[in-house]
Length: 534
Image (tube, rainbow, N blue to C red):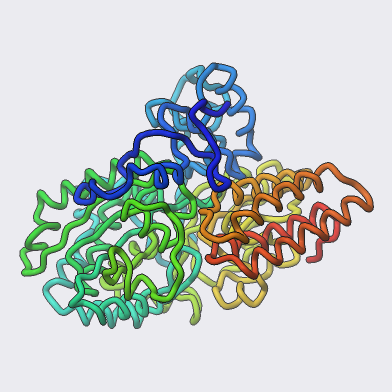
C-alpha cells in the first residue's frame, strides 16, 4: 500500500515530506524546501523499500511487496536496489538490504548468512574488478596496499596536461551508456580552467538490472575517489562531488568514510599528497529519481532544484553546476583512469577493440545460471556472454530475449546474439549497451507484463520537463495495459496504436530518457503480438 501522504504530481508518485540531504551543506539555503522541489522526488520516510525492477519482478518481487503490505508496513516501490544478482530485494526500516530467500521470507529471519555476490574476470587483464574480485578494499590501508592512489601521486608530481594526453590516447569511452570519449570531455572542460571547474562522479545507477557501480562504491570507494581526483587535476578543479542514489545507503556510507580517511591521510584537502594542488570531495545524496542519472538533471538536483533535464547547448563542460564548467563521469569510467595512467594508454588499447578499447563489467541478474559481475573485454559476442559466462537461464529454459541495459537499453532477440560488444557494432545493429545489465527473458516469461512494468517505470520516472515524455508515457502505459488484455484484431490494432505513440515520444522528447525507452518497448510490443523478427 502507498503512504497516506503520497500524491500525484506531473505523473509521478511522490510524497509530502521535509527535504532530506539532497544538497551539500554549503547549499543548505537553496530552495530545496519549496513545494516545487519536494514534490519532484519520490522518496518517502519510514517505508519498506521493495524493488519492482525487472529482475526482482521475475523472481518473486511482487510476492515480497504483498507480504510487506500484509504486515501493515508501508510499501515504498522502487525500480532498482542494485541487488539484481540476488533478487528479490528490499531495504528494511533500518535501510539494510534483504535479498533472495530472506526477502521472500520477510519479516521472518533465516538462519545463516546470505550468499556472497560473485565477481569474475573474463578479460586478459582486469581493469576495474581486480581488487574487488579478492574482497572488499573499502579501508584506506587495504586500498593503498593494493596500489590505490599510486597513480594520483605520480600525476600530481607531473603536469595536468600529461594526464589529459594519457586519457585521450587510451580511447576510453564512458561506461554509463552513451560511450562518449572521456578524454574529449575532459579536454573541453580544461579549456575553461580559469572558471573554477567542478568534477562529479555520477553514482545514480538506476537502470534496473545494473549493480556494478554499487559494488565499486561499497567495496572499492578509494578507487572511485582516485579517479575523480585525477579528473579534477586534469581539468583544474578544486572541488569534486560523488552523487549517490538514495537507494544505495551502504554505498553512501562507504564513500563518506573513505573521504574522511583520505582527508586524514592528506590525500584530499589543501595539499593533495604534499603537492601545491588543493582538492576536496563531498558526497551528495539523491532522493529517489531515476532521471537524475542524466547529467543535467543531476546538476539541478545538486543545486537543490527539481531534477529536470536542461536544454543543451550549453553543455555541462561549458556551463554546468552553478554555471561553472563541470565534468560528469560515471563510476566505472572513473575507476578505469588510474589503471590507464599506471599501465599506460597502449596497455588499455591492447584490450577490447579499436573503437571500444578496454573492458566492460557486465551485471548478470539472478535469472542466469551464473549471476554476478563479470569483467569482459569489448569485442566478446553477446552469445558467448549468454552461454559461456552467464551459463544460460537458471532453469535451462530457452531464451526468447534478453533485456540489455535496462528500460533505456534494448530487447535483444536470439538472432542478434552474434553481435559483439562494441559501441559501433552494437549501434549498427540498433542495440544499446546501456549500463551493461543483462536480465534473461526465458520462454514462458510474459512480455506483456514486462511491457506494462517498463512503461509504468517510464510514467513514474519522467521528470515532466517536456510534454511528449510526460503525457506520452502515461498514454503509452494505458495502451499497454489494454494491449495486455486484448487478443486478435483488437490486439493488432492496439499494438499499432502503441507503436505510433512510441515513435512520436522517441522523436520529440527532450532527453535520452524519453528518446531511449520507446525502442525496447517497441520490441516488447512486437513480442506481445507475436510479430517479432530476429
